[in-house]
Length: 226
Image 1 (tube, rainbow, N blue to C red):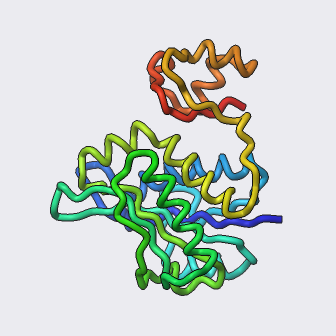
Image 2 (cartoon, helix red, strand yellow):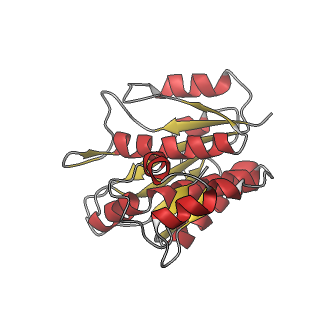
């Protein structure tokens, strides 16, 4: 059995980085729930360090990680800087040596860069949650919450971002992705045509993918279809 622990950074009394009413804690919860859902659809047993906007200490996150044998611990965050022009994705390991966590970090970084995010590289960092966990652990900073373009990218491509991270994890675990559960929108696709292709209703697709307007899907968007 394959076990993965997804850590949604911050939460509760700790909003993380903030830009107006937007918080890092909420962003990574939205993204993390999609990742968790897709991993489970591919047969991975997934636990979460928090279920909603809950306060969880760094110590309790690590304690949870060490209670069970996990193949990987993946901590999700969003970056911030006083320089509003700072942009891009970076993935951290505790020590940048040949290891399973470095392999996973490299896969995640490559997949997110291939989506169009600026490559800030795979780096070392002395972050508590990746230093203290027994299992291989990485921390991903998915763009800058302080950068308007990164926020637009995050909102418009959140399904693709989740899919990119999930694919990296599945590849690292040598699990073949259940591609039939997701559809990448092509030019000319409509939600109605996609629903007919997979034998689903447009209502199901709208609900599964949290679409605010089912008439507005775009090329490259990854939709759950089963």
